[in-house]
Amino acid sequence: MSESIVQVQQIDHVTFVVKDVEASRRFYVGVLGMREVARPAFSFGGAWFQAGATLVHLIEEHDKSGPAGFPVEVLERSTRNHHIAFTVADAREAARLLKAAGYPLLDDAKLRPDGAVQVFVVDPDHHVIELCSGP
Image (cartoon, rainbow, N blue to C red; front, side, top):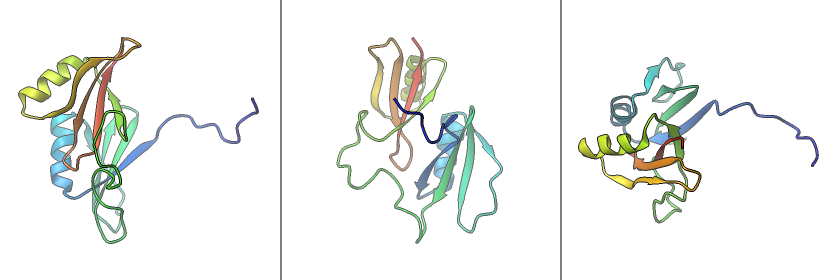
C-alpha cells in the first residue's frame, strides 16, 4: 500500500442545510444536548453547535444553498443510507428518552454485530442521526 497524499486527523464539522434554524436549534440543543457556539458573520443564516470535538454547522436554506433536508434522490430514509453518528453514554436510554418525549425513531435501539448499541432518529429536516454507545 502506498503512502497517502494527505492524512486527515479527525472530523472538524458536518454541515446540514435546514429550513428553520430555530426548530433545528431546539432539536440539537434541547434534544441532543449540544452547546451553541459563536458563528462567523456569514451573509446567510445558520447556527453552529459543539458536539464533543466535532462542530455541527447549520446553513439556512437560501437561493445559493442546496435544498434543506434529506437528499431528494433518496426515496427512503434508512439506517443504511446517509447519516451522521454521535456517541452517547447509553443508546438504549437515549432511545427510551426520545420515545418518552414524543420523538419517533427511524429505528429503535439495536445491537450491532460488534456489540455496540445504535438508535436512529431524524432532525426537523429529516436528516438521519444515529446515536451510538460502545460495547
